[in-house]
Length: 166
Image (cartoon, rainbow, N blue to C red; front, side, top):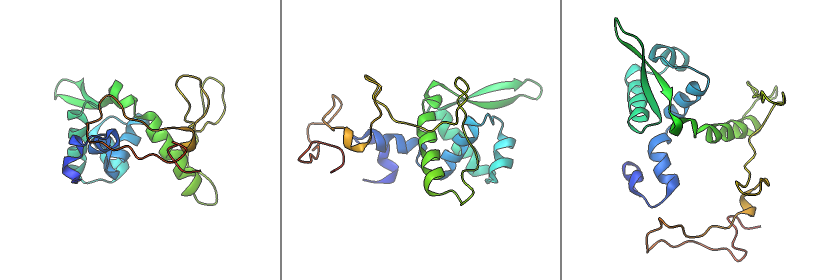
């Protein structure tokens, strides 16, 4: 598997990584979810080289994760806004944030908290079954072939048919 060919792999994770699989892209997305929209703001907050930032924003725009929206006509200026496809990445980033808060925070705890506006509680990401709502972990999921699987795809099976051995 070659990095530049991930978008053609018969694996949804590989294809997703072809769009968001580098650290600067994830940091740009973090800023988008913090409502940063303008090139200069990204550049200032991230301390990223202009050409690297321009490349990541173009890649995210070309992939339909961000869209450019004019906010000024003379001179024409545009900002970057998350599309529906981009907003769908929120659970991914929140899950990574929770992992970082748990395993990478200092002794004082996480630098930012996320408070649910509806109930007022500080929240964490909890993967749940879309059908029954029950929380799920890696041992609660069986992996099987999907309709987009190529004929030669081999799906490894553990004796219990779970994603992770118990």
